[in-house]
Length: 112
Image 1 (tube, rainbow, N blue to C red):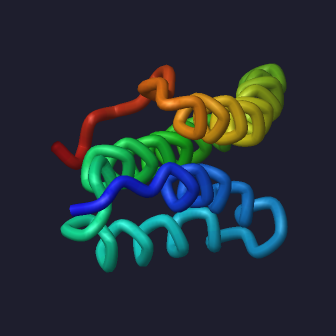
Image 2 (cartoon, helix red, strand yellow; image 1 turned 30 degrees about the vertical axis):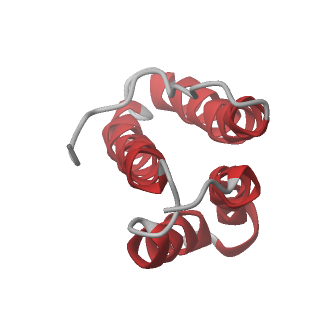
């Protein structure tokens, strides 16, 4: 196995494809993780972390939609989810590039 911080960083940043394509932020990290997890040191842990984060955001978005009918509360939750979905991939890509361990808050551990 080899160390490749740049690929790990790009994997974290690839989540931002959701802004352009809608679902690319899940598919691209999934493909990178499946193809590189045995070749790149740390890719397995980072890939699982990213996919858990993406799945968690999806679940939170589904829960927020019915809450829109309840005093518009769901709109604020969706705005918060959008901000988190933009900020944390960038922060964690910087952490990975600096050799630090990234973390995503409020993530449901589905893949272990």
